[in-house]
Structure formats: C-alpha cells, structure tokens
Amino acid sequence: MVVKLPILSVERWSGWRRCSRLASPETMKLPAAPRTKKARGAFCNLPLLLLIGAIQFLVIYSPAIDRYMVMITNGKPGFPSLLLDGRRGFKLVEEEFIPEPRVSCDFADLRSDVCELEGAIRIRGSTSEVFVVSPSGAAANVTGLGPGMNATSWKIQPYTRKGEARVMRGITELTVRVVAAGEAPPCTVRHDAPAVVYSNGGYCGNYYHDFNDNIIPLFVTSRHLAGEVQLLVTQKQRWWFHKYREIVDGITNYHAVDLDADAAGEVRCFRRATVGLRSHKDLSIDPRRAPRNLSMVDFKRFLMWRYALPREHAIRTEEEEGGEVGSTPARPRMLIIARRSRRRFVNLPEIVALAEEVGFDVTTSDVMSSSAAKTKAGGGSGSSSSTPAGGATAAAGAGDEGHARMADASKLVNSFDAMVAVHGSGLTNLVFLPMNAVVVQVVPLGRMEELAMDEYGVPPRDMNMRYLQYNITAEESTLSEMYPRAHPVFLDPMPIHQQSWSLVKDIYLGKQDVRLDLRRFRPVLEKAIRLLR
Image (tube, rainbow, N blue to C red):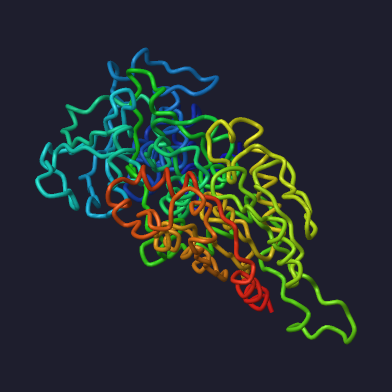
C-alpha cells in the first residue's frame, strides 16, 4: 500500500528543524535565552503541529477506517463480526437513514395492478407483506390507489390477468403496509438492486401465456435496469426458470428469489421496489408507456441476443434484388405449424403442395419437438413429436428437455421467412421470426376474428413483420360434420360466447379442425410471397 505523506514546504521544514534543535538534549543544557515571538518561529507550537498532523491523517485515511468499522460491525467472509448482535450493540446494522417514502400505484389499468415504492422498503415473504417505512410515522405520499382503498394498508395481486376472476383466485395476494420505523420488522438481508415482485402462477406452462403474462411484462418492467434488478417471485415454478433461463439471465444479474421459501424471520430490505408487472396489450408493448420507449422490436432483438439467432431480417427475393439473368431466384422458406390435436390442418399434404407450387420451400413442424422434417408435395406432416404445438403444458416444457427445446425452437423458427398456423399457442413462435417475415393466421369458425387479431394480429406489425389473416367458412370447419347447418353453432355463435367461455373453448377450440379450401387460400399464399419481394 502506498502511503501519501503530506508535502511540507521549505519554510515548514525549516520550522520543524528549529523546533527540533530547541528540544534537543544539547539545547536543553543551555541556559534559557530570552524568547521573542520572532525567534520562536511560526512552527514551534507543538500542540498546533500535532493538531495539523491529526487532521491530515484523518483526511487521508478516513475511507479505510470507515470500511474497517463496517467489517467489524457487520462481519465479512474471513473477517467475523466483533459484535455478537448488532441490534443489541451499537445498532449499526439496523440503523439507517429512512427517507420520506413515495408510493405511486396504478389500480386503474385493465390488465394489471402495479405499485412503485421508494424509500425504506422491507419485504417479508413468509407473511406476504411489503412494508413501506415512514420515518415520522405520518401517512406516506401515496397516489394511484383505487376508490375507497386505505392509504396505509392495501392488497395487491402481482399477476397480469387482473380481469379474469377464475385465474386470479389462485394468485397469491400481497399486503402493502405503510408503517412507522418502530413498527417495521428488522432487516435480515439488504439488497443494493431494486426489487420486482410478481407471481409465477396463473396460466404458467401455456406457451402463449408464458410470453404474454410473464416474459414480456418482465421485459417491460425490468429491462431498462440493465440487469440490476432482484426478482422476488411468489408461486415460483423452478422448471419454468430453467426452461427460459436465457431470457431470465438477460433480465437480471441475480438469482430469482422464491419468496414462498423464505424462512419465517427473513426480511429483505430495498430502497426501491415494484410490486406487480406492467402489461400493455396481448403479446406486445406500447412504447409510449414503456420505460425508455421500449418496443417489441427491442424485445425481438433481445431474444436474438439471448438465443444467438443469426437472422435479423427475412429473405428478399432475387426479383427485387436484381439478380443475374438466368439465375435461379431464391425460394423463401415457409413453416407450417402442424398441431397434433385440436385445430389441426386435416388436408395438410395438399396445403404443402399448394405452398410449394406458389414458390415456397415448405417445412411442417409443431416447433417444440426435437426435430422438424422437410415435407414435399403430397407427403405427410413430418412432425413426430407428441407435444402439442407450442408446448401447452408445464410437464412438456419442464427440466432440461424444455430448455433444450426452447433453444432448438428459436433457431428453427428464425430460419424461416413465413409462417402459417391455425389460431393457437403455436403462433407464439412468431417472436423468433426475423423482421420483415410474413405471418399467416388461419382463424377457425366461431366469431374468433377479433380475438385472433388482438392476440396474434397486432404483435407481428409491432415487430416490423407482415400479417395476413384468413377466416375459414363453415364448409372448411369439421364442425360441419358434427352439427346441422341450422344449428346455433353456425348461425349465431355470440350467445355461446356470452353464456360461457368454457363452452366456446370446448366447441370452437376443442372440437374443431380445419380443411382449407385451396382455391380460397391460394391468393393468401400468393400475397405472402409478394410481400417478401
């Protein structure tokens, strides 16, 4: 360690020497001479010199002393605390500067409730409580609560399906309390990074909901913090964090904490915390409401980075690029999602043949299987996996298998220029397509057009992709083989929608397959290939 000594001027050094001579043994033997102010010198006042030296020492070494005292008080690896209990000693562990808190909530949003907390924040997972400490004990500056809510204590469910009572009944409820310093539980763990608290329950395990309810809201809420964020998760699914670990590791530099597994006395302390996740719209982001104007293009590039995807843009055919005369134009690649059950393409080989005739190089796959097979005109589906399209169950995506499938699926989808799929979770794979790619959604019978547009029609456009929608007729639905044409299933689906979503799900999503009319569908494929030129 290099020690920086105070620099003395020549005059000061001379003063020191004069003082030394006056104090030497030889000098002390001489009779005292008459002393004057001038003869004494400016630097012969020993107490003054000691005071100056002490001040210089403190200025130079005070940072090191501060670190040393912290180690003595708190303890460090290999440097145990000299206090048996900091709370019973000098209370250096517990005493902290407690600023006036600020609480900004949004309970008016239709998709999720969110509270931003600043100040001295203490979170106790074992009791599902969040404490906002007020130094004066007075009410904090709390804004954005709903009508009739108590500004000193309120409930919040940190999940992004706020309007769906059926699923929200199973979401852990957190209690936020504004308390005086003496009423807050003592800290056991201090975190430097701000916290984001949310639930990993609900529809977790459905491929669409994994992205829509968790991943994209996490990105919106946390990405601007550049990894310096501590995730606190209720109802944490360990397999889920393993399956999507590339994404999670890109959002946070820290291991996600399972709040439900915290010991009874564990209290985690932060300076800032967000309770709940921000969600703007289905499978998409509103840049006007996102920190730093994050968009779905930013999200797509984030996925490309995390999964090392090579293609940012889809193919542009030779016709527009001005290829050489006589050269074979590049054939854009099309992926057809081949569902294994519910809303399957009944005449898939004929669809493949038509797409290849139009000019595509076609592959069919359920995507989340371990492999995809090239399918020629008149061939089979080429998909051998028993996993539903998109991996719709938690078991299908659990453990190392789910993680490996995600890596394979992202690279597979990124290699295509166009994708065709019946409405369903398999369309979620569009997030891995390159920009400028074409997405074709086939909408089944049952007044599903608006839902289909919200869930999978808007996101491609927000990601700089092209979108085409094909609404089937009654003749193209296998429901025509189960019900007479005069049945309400065909004539007026709206009363069924109003009666029960479960009934809609059972009939229109659970019993229906699709037999495309190739003559009607051909213009859609022709438009798709034109969009790539």
